[in-house]
Length: 353
Image 1 (cartoon, rainbow, N blue to C red):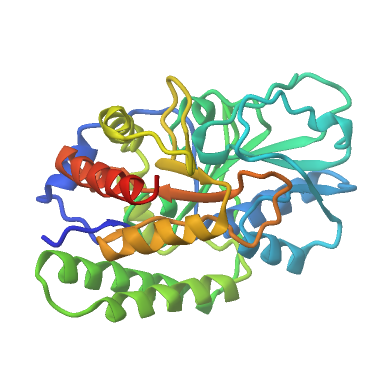
Image 2: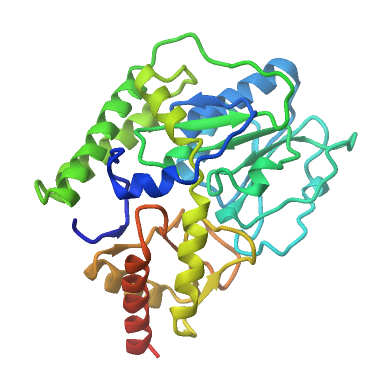
């Protein structure tokens, strides 16, 4: 198999060692999860459900958020306001009730799996709270949430052609909430993303085809998700994928790989490693304060088959340390991969003292 770290997922089969590693971390839950085609579809369903039951004054979203999600929600709602939070400072005790009050809805993002929000769920003057755990599916914060609703875009975590999940924490009874409509765009997205996954598998494991084959399909699938504007029920194939994967805990391998690689990394003045004791972050998180150095680092990595994700670069952050990379260290990768990743990082540090 070709060595590649990062970038999009590829299709897994039950005989793959990567799948076996993930399968070893199966968990059981009594929580009722509602399954959707994407995180955007899931979030739209939550807002529509809330609006059926409540008069909402303001929808508060964090400034540092996926621009595709922001644009999608602005297509549907004209009462959205943004609030500022430093996504790299998980130590702050963030008081969102300074501005978000009863009658509002606020989305709190568990950035990179490192955040916890301190609030009183029994407060009589608080907004309706939605926690976004897209960076931390099955994390303790997600499983022990005090929020009114939770959401996760699980296609960020698993090799599946779409998928979002919502749930009401610790609900004694719950029912699904879907739109009775047809959505051709979301069906086209499913087929394009399915083809991208399978073609990337062939490229990596059988050395056939080329990157353009699966990357173009990935881009096509993303464009169809952007065109979609519904919260219809996923088709039976996607439902099966979701039910098969969402019970498999990705954090076990991430924590193991992170614990292994951190002591192997040399120190650098050019970046900080975001980490929190006893938490399993979204990946290996590197934060820079110089854009040209940041770009140089990315070029060095791509030359060596490593593809760090520059999350949401269009956000204007009011902080010196703001150039951010996530490097995936999930179930696709073993300790040999971590050794290789550490070597490439340390080589760059030597070249850039």
